[in-house]
Length: 287
Ligand code: NAP
Image (tube, rainbow, N blue to C red; front, side, top):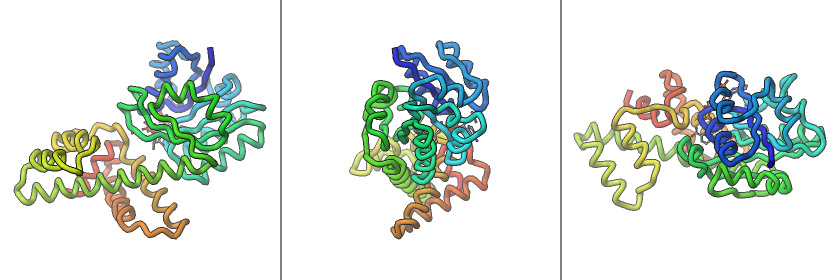
């Protein structure tokens, strides 16, 4: 039986690690706040005291962490993931970060004789629970092939996109489109309300035509109910918008719509909505 490590048991990491356990793999977990390991331990996971203990005992370790700062902290801390990496060991970072962060971590892992893959995911809490994420991997092809039996338990589609950085860039572009769609959708809902139109009517009209999509359907109903329980925390969406705008900056691509949407998410953070769902940008737009 293959054994895997898993670092980071947040909204996404916990159900992803659970799916590995359910598939019968031996899994060793670690989380900064150790209480989040209890549920996984009850399902049979081994719990480690530090990331180095996980990477030092598992052939392949997955990480699912908040942002570039978290991904670097977990890798480079004195008892971090890098310390446990030896010849041939695999490290698969599934966090959404920028290409430069991913390449920095990848270079450090390679320097110690390890192998690295970035594998950010598209899809939220429910697809993480259902094992139906879309996995955007790039880096070492051999490690992708070796990790595939586990990736296939977490995702319904596992793409290999080539050289390191391509997965990170693809993920940021996808989320930039999503953040832009969410802000214009919320502006539409706000405008409809001011125009005396029923929100439910707008949702029905959108859903009946070419603009229909699962995100408008799911989030629209929740926004109308005032339900902003986090599936994708707003602070992470703003991080992705910020990193996408920076990518546009680096590549000389104007991103007028994305830059404006980023401002709405920044305003939402300033209003204290960081830990709500990213659809809570509606509250910033209507405030
Ligand atoms: P989350 O619930 O906020 O979990 C974040 C994880 O990172 C937790 O395990 C947290 O540990 C850990 N962490 C944060 N800062 C850390 C630090 N400095 N050192 C060590 N650990 C740290 O976030 P999530 O929704 O699971 O998202 C995880 C990643 O997936 C993010 O990059 C996000 O952009 C991406 N993503 C999320 C979704 C979604 O819908 N939620 C979808 C696709 C991609 P603690 O438990 O100790 O705080």
